[in-house]
Image (cartoon, rainbow, N blue to C red):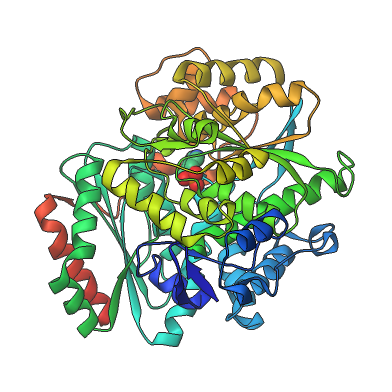
Length: 510
Ligand SMILES: *Cc1c(COP(=O)(O)O)cnc(C)c1O
């Protein structure tokens, strides 16, 4: 049974947690039976009352992931974490999510680049790491809805990457539909065409006049619109989100930490049980948190490196214990990491504080009121044992892409370059470092080509040039994108968003 990070009394089954996304008290759903050792001792020291929470600790043994296929590890991890899913349901989800969607069955291959290992998470249908989770979440949600007899309409505001991955994942998934809203003129040409060409009878996408914040605020207002929610409920439809706080997005990301470790053991790069470092380009703290879950489940990890761009709120938090969102927001060349409030950090606070829901609730209240909070020394100490951090400027991002290309012929994208840049000193010191690579360089061709020394104003031209420079081939979906058929071209005002939702509810209800 899951409970909220803010109260042990707010509980949900895995299926309900997936359907709801957020807990009723505003907290995030977590599993109390993860994380032994200091966590449990400090929980006891804090006088945690919910003793039964810690009865059955969820652990994987090395034989659960060493020498196993990617999907076998998914099956093992899901059957432990999603306990109200039957094994047939899990098999179904795996088949629908990962058959023929990724370039190879490994899903996430590891490559040696210089003295580092790069974990490529971008071989899915939209060429970004969000595919790993957003191909699976719709399957998990569909099974979760089947119990309730309800249908779900997913509403998502996007600055580019998430929208396409979510549309692709939900396309033609039973009992669901999705409406995506992006700022008109505010996404790249590649991102625009990726969304505008998405097939599926249950997907819709709209360019909204204004910037990303306008689109995001618009979606928030729709979720809070009581009349609209009542209208949907009458028709058996729930409004839902594909946000990365959903446990259905978190769980699929745990797998590649295990599978990459297993791959290094298989290749003789490390011995079974050796501790390694993972470096993770971080925005909403979802990806690195999934690594932490793998660690709690027994994966031998020495450190996680939280890698930020110029928006370095997390780097500062890991170093000082103070989270301060009162700062300037920068738009950078790694846009998927441009974020000031990293929602999933709340889950780390829960475990690192010894599962102290009262403390977590207090910090989140402070964040809401003052945009800022400071954790206590014990929690800070727990986090410091395992987490390192750093941030890289836009210039450093580009120079890293340049240097890695010069030295190894490998082309990193801007997000992956940040992780690589910050992890480099540890690899140079002889550590085994896996640097997570979250997007194909072909998704950000202008920035990447400028790093390689050519400033090109037309994105499609930059893509063509990158095809020549990069020995790794361009994914077919991106290579053919410029001339693909446009299926969605609606441009709307923010006030019209509500009408698009009503139309989508009517269509989904049938
Ligand atoms: C979303 C995203 C990230 C950040 O991941 P979080 O889970 O939000 O920390 C990094 N890189 C790319 C390319 C992304 O799309």
